[in-house]
Every structure is written in structure tokens, then in C-alpha cells.
Image (cartoon, rainbow, N blue to C red; front, side):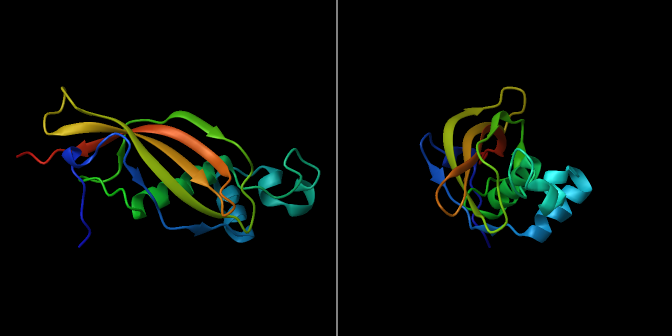
Length: 150
């Protein structure tokens, strides 16, 4: 059984990691075909003559990969991964076939919720990096986390 972290277990400055996710041509095209079918996400030849100068994953694909890595990573908030929004989402470079992504999430603030006793907000600064250590995406997110209720 995996240990879940309650509101009281989080402190500013804590850092949580993740496993990695290998991006492939097939999963870039599959995601894009369904959710963001722009030519630079679905056609390698046409993508060469685009802003990206080659096939690139949709930023939304990168965000979904990040979500998966957060859910399966070290963070493990009690009550599940319940986001209360996304702040300052930025994409810094294209994600390409062959990139291997991982996530680093740092606690930037915690507080109890006045409107929902027994729960709190843990604000996380999330950075997605490729296998070279280059940052490809960042955002801040307030997560709703269950308190221990002692």
C-alpha cells in the first residue's frame, strides 16, 4: 500500500519527483490526432517547414504527461490529486520524439481551507524536464489535500 500524504505532512520547500515517460512519434501523433490535430503535431514532413522545424508534441500533451507523472510519482496527496486550477502555465521548448520527461514538484505554500474544514490547499510549483535536464514546461497549481483530522 502506498503512503498518502495529508495536509499536515507538507512543508514549504519539500520537493517530490517522478518516474520518467518516454515520448514517441506514435504517442505524439495519437494524442494530436484526437485533441490538437495541427500539422506540426501529426505530419513529420510538413512539420519540418513549421515554427518547430520538426514534429513536436502538443503543449497539452506535455501537460497530460505531466499529470500522469504527478499522479504516479512521489507526491501522493491524501484524497487524490485534486487540482484547484493552474497558474502561470509556460512551455519553453518543444517536446520531441525520443525525449524522456520527468517532473519535479516543490511545495510553495500550504494553508487550511476556511470553506471546507478538514481540507487544505498545497500550492505546488511543477517543472517538467527532458532527459537532458532542460525545462520544457512549468506551472503552479493549488492542490486540494485532505487533512489528517486528528
